[in-house]
Length: 107
Length: 113
Image 1 (tube, helix red, strand yellow):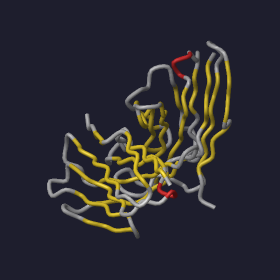
Image 2 (cartoon, rainbow over the protein chains, first blue to last red):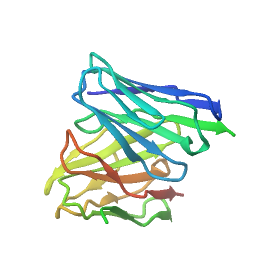
Image 3 (cartoon, chains in turn green, orange):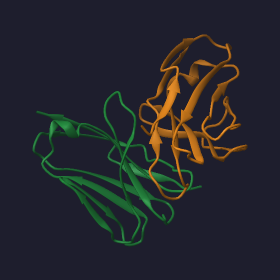
Image 4 (tube, rainbow over the protein chains, first blue to last red):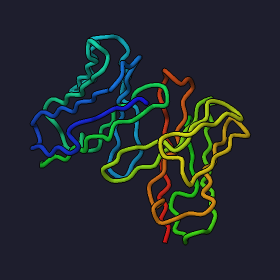
């Protein structure tokens, strides 16, 4: 079945540093979604990517979908303490989630 | 307000005592699912439902049951809970399977002693 792998599992940065998480699928994805879960909270939808090579930005967040539609990345520029949380990617169909990347930030 | 609700939010129970976690959404979504979240394992899908009376197994269905008699409700049933089912559970819904945002409930933290 469809599998989505996400790396790294954990990332600790100093406030102001950049952060990137990567998502890789064993199969071609029709789309990919990204979610953020704050500590103690529930996952919240961030964005959906559909097109090959697509790049979308939300303020300091940049999302990319690979040309082959098998991988994706989320990059945060100049992290802030509000970025703390776990970031998940999810493939379509049964919405298979990656393991998530937990981001912690040293203020 | 569009939302997914779950009850209870917290539950401590003992091995073998049947329990039900309710889930309800007010967005007329067809697709609903249950996930469990464990440290280091991310979100794993337990069961999903693509519409009323249509349910299917996710990745970790053992020890769980679900039903979808109405569009808005999707309860998760543990007939005989065991300690390895101690976890954080999320219900979620979305309008269409391959597109649309998935909305998550607030979560139910279950402890089985």
